[in-house]
Amino acid sequence: MRSIALSLLCFSMLACGSDDSDPKSSTGGTAAKPVGTVWLAWAAPGPRGDTVRVLRRRYEGDRDAVRRQAVADALGGLLGPDG
Image (cartoon, rainbow, N blue to C red; front, side):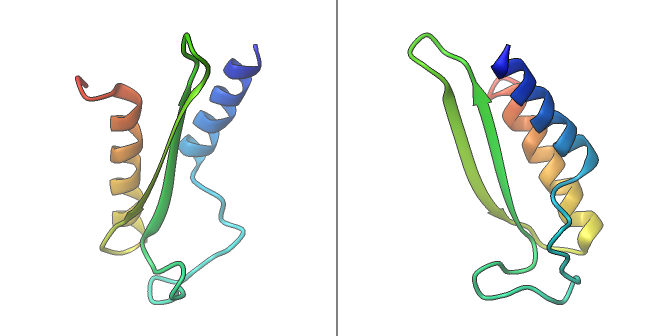
C-alpha cells in the first residue's frame, strides 16, 4: 500500500507542477541549477525490490516550453520504451 501512496503522491505532484518554492525567472538560475533544469524520477515495485530511475534534463525555452517538455518526458518514462 505504501508504493501506491507514493505513486499517487508523485503523480499528483507531476500533474500539479513541481515544487515552486524556489521560483526562478526565465532569465534567472544559477551555475548549479541553470534555467530549464528539471529532475525526473520514476519508481516501480519489482521482484527484486523497487526500481528507481532518476534523470536530470535541461530544456530550452520559456517556462511553458520547459514544462511541456518535462511533462512529455515524464509521461514517456511512465509508458516505457514501448509507449
